[in-house]
Length: 472
Image 1 (cartoon, rainbow, N blue to C red):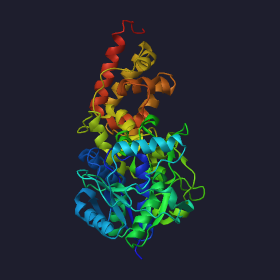
Image 2 (tube, rainbow, N blue to C red):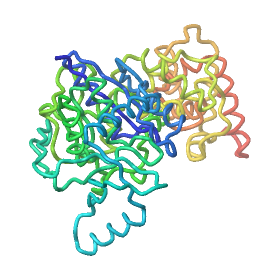
Image 3 (cartoon, helix red, strand yellow):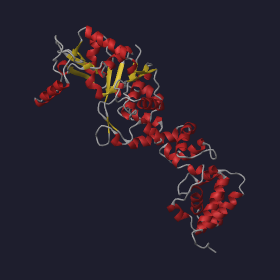
Image 4 (cartoon, rainbow, N blue to C red):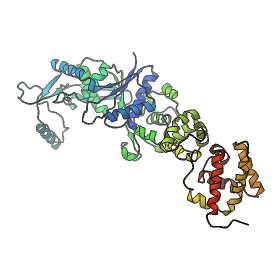
C-alpha cells in the first residue's frame, strides 16, 4: 500500500502556525514512508473563501518547502462529483430531504437546552411521506441509530462514539451546495487518502465521516488527531499571542529551517534532541511519538533556533535570503561588501535576518546621524588626536585588510599611550554611527577606504563643532 496523506486548509485566512504544523506532520509521514502528499483547498465556503487567502496558503507552503506530489485540488471544481455522491446516498436510502424551517430548528434547540439535553436534530423529516410544497429542502445523511463508531486513532488511541450521540447532519444546503463533512469524505475517498492527519478539533467530525464512508462501502483511512497548540497563558493559540501567520515570521526574518524545526518539536520528540535538519525529520518522525497532550508555544525557543540556524547554515544560503530584507529596509547594496561577507561578520550578533538587515546599513550607505549616547561618550575632544592619526595612517595603508588595520589601531594606541578602546571605540562610532558593530578592524575593511576616510573627516568636524577647544 502506498501511503497517501493530505493537507486540506480552508482559504479563509493565512496559513497559521497550527495549520503549518499539521501540514508538516502529514508531509513528513508521507516522505518517511515513501508515500505521496496531496494539497487540497477546501473552498466551498464561498462567503469566506478568498483568492488572497489561497495565495497566502500556497506562499506559506512554498516558503516552508512543503512540496506536494499532487494538487492543489479545489473543491469548488468538484461540485458535479459531490452531487453524484449525494444522489447515490439518496437512492440508497442513506440520505433524505429535510423541510424543517429555521424557526422550528431554533425552537427545538432551545427546548433541548432548557431540558439540559444535547442539541441535536430530532429526525422529524427522516421518514416523511408527504413533503410540504414550495419549500427548498436541505439533504441530511441518515446516520445509524444504534451501535458505536470505533476510531483507532494513531495518536489518541481507540475512541468510541455512540451513534445515538450523532444526529442526521446536513450534507447539502437548500441551494444544493455540499457541506464540509460530505466533501471531505468524497475527496479522501477519490484521492485514495490512507492517513488523515489533522488537528483534534476535527475529532468530533470523524465518527460522522466514518459513517458516511461506511454508507458508501469505502475502505476507511487511518486517523491521527494532533493536539492543539496553546499560548503561554494556556489558551488556544491566537492572534493575541503574537505573530501566528507563517509569512509574518518570514517578514520578521525567521528562517524556514528554524520554523520547521520548532514546529516539529511542538508535540513530537526524539529523545532529548532539539535540532533537526529536514533529512533528520524525515528519517525520525513517527506518529507514535506525538504527544497526546496540547503543546505550548514558546517564542524564546523559536528565537534560539533561529539564531542557531543563522550561525550554522552556509553563509551563501543565508545571503541569498538576506538581500530581500536589505531591500525592504531601503538599503542599496550595489557598493559595499558581498552579502556572504556580511553574513559572516554579523551572524553571531543577531537573532533574525530582519535584525541583520537593520543593523547593516552603514556597510553600504552613510548614516544620517550618530547615536546620541555613543557620540556623547566617544566623540569628544580627547578623541581628536587618535582619530586624526588613524585617518592619516589609514589613508596611507596599501593593504586594506583587517589584520594591518588592526595593527594600525594598536600602533596608534601605543604612540599615544592610550588603551586600545580609546582608539578603537571613537573610530567605531565615527565609521558606523554607534557603539556596536562587528570587530572594528573587519568593519573598517568591509566599509572600504573611501567611506571610512570620509566618515572620519565627518567625525572630526563633528567634534570640533561642539565648541570645545582642542587640547594644546
